[in-house]
Every structure is written in structure tokens, then in C-alpha cells.
Amino acid sequence: MSYVDEVIDLVVEKNPAQPEFHQAVKEVLESLRVVIEENEEAYRKDALLERLVTPERQLLFRVPWVDDNGQVHVNNAFRVQFNSAIGPYKGGLRLHPSVNLGIIKFLGFEQIFKNSLTGLPIGGGKGGSDFDPKGKSDREIMAFCQSFMTELSKYIGADTDVPAGDIGTGAREIGYMFGQYKRIRGVYEGVLTGKGLSYGGSLARTEATGYGLLYLTEEMLKCNGHDIKGKTVVVSGSGNVAIYAVQKAQQLGAKVVTVSDSTGWVYDKEGIDVALLKEVKEVKRARLTEYAAARPSAEYHEGRGVWSIKCDVALPCATQNELHLDDAKELVANGCIAVAEGANMPTTIEATEYLQKNGVLFAPGKAANAGGVATSALEMSQNSERLSWTFEEVDGKLKNIMVNIFHNLDEAAKKYHMEGNYVAGANIAGFLKVADAMTAQGIV
Ligand code: NDP
Ligand code: 2IT
Image (cartoon, rainbow, N blue to C red; front, top):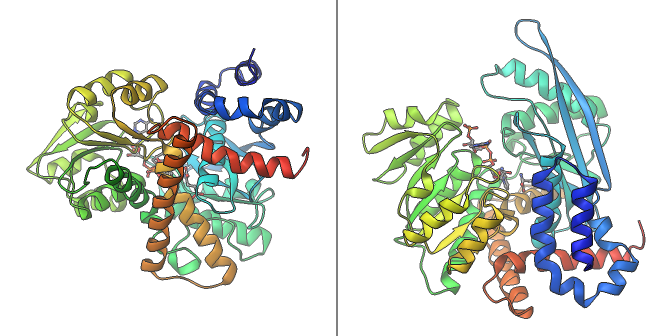
């Protein structure tokens, strides 16, 4: 049996009931086959793949907190420190009821390659909790964040592990966590990114993932003879990534006609009104029904349906496995030319293969959404030198990073005779740097 198949089987056997983790490992290892086969003897001897798929450290802890009625709740929390070959662990914290160890491991595994692709010195990690921030008061959110950080603070630090936001964790949560870390550890350092601007945050971090997604999409389209200008775009999600993807797409001259949340979706034939979307989602923390109620050109639909709208470009920006094979078929039938993943692993393996087989340009999340973590690394640099750069400076570096990422994928795919297969390109380019660093550092 080939080394790749052996390790995939091992992962499935040793990590039962973690389907998302299996999926992420399969997707990466399958596309590394050619590279692994070239070096099979050396990699096997060093158990390089077994080490790559096994986190360096996994922290599981309980988070007790008190609600506004005096009732105590207990949540499960996780921090998976996956791989530190090229830098301190770096990756977000997800707060969502669906969070479990398998979800955090899939995200942490993806993060290794994504962080490598940025070209910056950051290793892979991820964390979070099954806490549901929806409907909680500010005091309840603070109580949870403080209790969570009371335990997490023992394991992180500006040079060891630097968490950030993800689903359910935004500026408010990062603020409460930073305050508690500083209080417990007594150190003022860049231990978290996505901080507020008044206490060490970076300009353009809020916008970075969505903007970066569009910079990469623009470059991918350009290199394939298309222009983002004038294109019709469908976006899923309406959180941090989706909002700034909509904004940048519009700035580049595209028309974005959809957004969604976990209960429904909006089709706005006039194009999404970003100011209204921000008011509904960032200020009021309300549902999309409020957007539709305030906007005569918008239709609201319950359930899912974004991918049924005719478009040129589709940008899944909500969550994992939200774009299925049937959706891919509908996109192709409607003439979609490009899909770029703002979320982590939003497209199922079958849907990805269908899109690629049918000539749709496909940019995987670990490349397309790397602008968020790349800008987090820029926040770390600013914290280290105790300076803040201007918005234009950060945004300019972000754009360069995204354009470079695209060319690195493109070249890696060409080098291994898979031209246009950006999934393989991303996995290969991300892997080679990590494998080289792991090999150089010996058996650790
Ligand atoms: P937010 O919490 O800001 O927004 C998440 C959005 O996705 C909301 O609209 C939410 O709807 C929707 N959503 C979440 N879970 C589900 C679900 N199970 N089913 C349907 N809709 C869902 O998160 P972000 O925008 O930060 O993250 C979105 C994606 O982007 C995630 O995959 C994340 O890992 C990824 N990502 C984020 C980065 C960042 O910098 N923030 C960087 C790189 C990737 P509702 O409000 O109803 O729950
Ligand atoms: O998935 C991701 O890359 C993030 N949630 C951002 C991580 C970070 O450290 O900024």
C-alpha cells in the first residue's frame, strides 16, 4: 500500500468520529501524492506524515460561567497546537455550538498549510468552544471569555501560541480575553490578534480576510483572461469574512447579489447595501430578515439557496461543507466561472472535483482566505516593534501577499504537471516549506 494511503487509513482508525478531520487530511494527502512518492523512502523513515497529522499538543478543558440569572453553565473548550515547525502556533478561536475536537483538528490541520503559504513565520493551531454566543448579554459573553482565558492563559504567549478570531469570536470577545490574559499573566504583549485599535490591534485586520479573498480572486481571474469588474457574485454568510468580501468585490466593480446566515438568505437584485448589512450584523447583531425589511429590492428566503442564483463568481464565506455536489451542478449549469473559498473547507470533496472537472477556476480556502492570518502576522510584527502602520501600508502588504500566494499555487501546480489545479498547488506549496523545516529540526 502507498505511504499516503497507509497514513489516511491510520488517521481514520486513530481518530474515530472526526469526519471533518478525516476529510481535511484526505484532501491534503491525496493531492500530495506525487510529492510524497518522489521522497517516499526518506519521509517514511522519518515518519514525516504520521508526525504531520498528529498534533504536537491538544488541550481540552472545561469552562464554567454564570449567566444573568445566576445559573452556572459548563462548556467544553479546546486548543490544538498542531505544528510549530515554521513559527509559533497561530490560528483562531471558534465559538459555536457545533465545535468539538474533530472540528478544531480539521481547522488546525488546514491552518498549518495556510500559514505556510503566507510566507510569514507562523505555525498551525486552532481552538474554541461549544459555547453559543447568540442571544447572550454582554456580561454573559464577558463571563465566558474570562473563564475561558483563565485556563487558556497557561498555554499561550506572544512567542508560543497566538490565538485570534473565527466564527463567533470578534473584536468584543478578543477584547475581554486580552484583558483577562493581561490581568492573570501581568504581561502586556501581542498574545492575541484582531485586537481593538486602541490596544495594539492592526488597521485592516477587520477587513483582511474578505479583502484578501478578493485580491486573490481578482488575480486568479486576471491570469485566466477574465476581469472581476462587471461580474455577478454570490456570497454566503454575513459575518466578518462575508461583509468585507462584499465590500471589496463592489469596490472592484463587481455586483454582489446574495448573503446568508444560518436561518436564511437574501437575494438583492440591486446589489447588497454594505452599510445596511453592517448595521444589521455588526451593530444590532440581528437576523437578515431585518436587512430585507429595510431594503425594498431584497427578497428574504428561509433555509439555504444562495448557490441557485445565476452568477459568474461564487464565494462561500460561512462554514465548512456548505457547498455540496448538487450546488456545484447548479453553479456550473448557470455558467459560474470561479469559486473562491472565504470560509475553511466550505466545499465538499465531491463538489470541488465536479467544479474542477467542469472547468471552474477553484481557489481553496487555505490560499483564498489566508489574508486574515497573514494580517494577524503583520499585527504581531507591529506589536513586536511597538509601532502601528497605516491602513494603506497594511492593505498594500496584504495585497502583495495574496498575489504572491496565487502565483505560488499556480507555479507549484504547473511544476507537478497539474496546471490550473490550485487545490494541489496550495497543498504542495504549503507542505514543502513545513516538511523542509521539520526535516531540518530532527525528530521532535
Ligand atoms: P462570523 O461569526 O463573523 O460569521 C459567520 C457567518 O457564517 C454568519 O453569517 C453565520 O450565520 C454563518 N454560519 C456560521 N455557522 C453556520 C452554519 N453551521 N450554518 C450556516 N451558516 C453558518 O465568522 P467569520 O466570518 O469570521 O468566519 C466565516 C468562515 O471564514 C469560517 O469558516 C471561518 O473559519 C473562516 N475564516 C475566518 C477568518 C477570519 O479572519 N475571521 C479567516 C479565515 C477563515 P449565523 O450568524 O446565523 O450563525
Ligand atoms: O481561519 C483562520 O485563518 C482564522 N480564523 C484567522 C486566524 C488568525 O490567527 O488570524
